Length: 121
Image: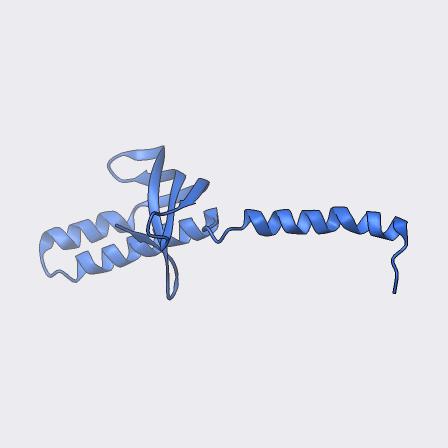
């Protein structure tokens, strides 16, 4: 089956766009995935602090439960040196009990875990 010249030329831009999209999605976490990793990490830390059995841990858990993440925006991710995760520059809009609402930019190291992206040390 032969494609007419007109059909072939109309297929070229679509193919090029598809290839560019594949090239852009290099496996790095999206803004939504980074936000979910932050929320999961905070929940896990609060649970560990609560379970520590001391009053300071309980107080820390209470404070962490009041932190509100308003927005997370990935400014770009690069593969880490080990090739096991990504170092992502992230802009965060967060409200915490002591600092109030603040926007900050940080670099987070994310790795793909069994349940999704996780913040690594």
